[in-house]
Length: 104
Image (cartoon, rainbow, N blue to C red):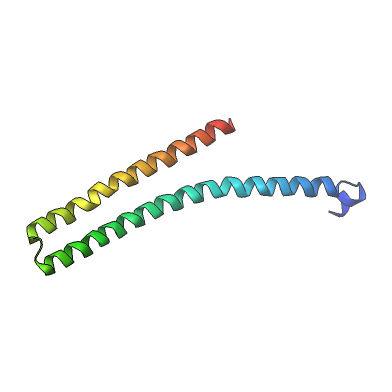
């Protein structure tokens, strides 16, 4: 830094380092945001299944539903919500691809 100051180049280098740091922060945040969205979607699938199990348990206790029907619904719930996870993964993969194509 002393050599840069001696040749009056410290300001330009400092601005360049700031720009590089900002670009690095933006490029590393995109995959993190995409990954957290996928993780959040996976968590929501678990929560949705738990909520359905809770409602089914209450209906079973009240006698409003048969056990076989409740088990069938409970088995189908994760499969139907996993389609949303697949849709989310494809959306984020295409968004990453569009971003990469734009960088070219």
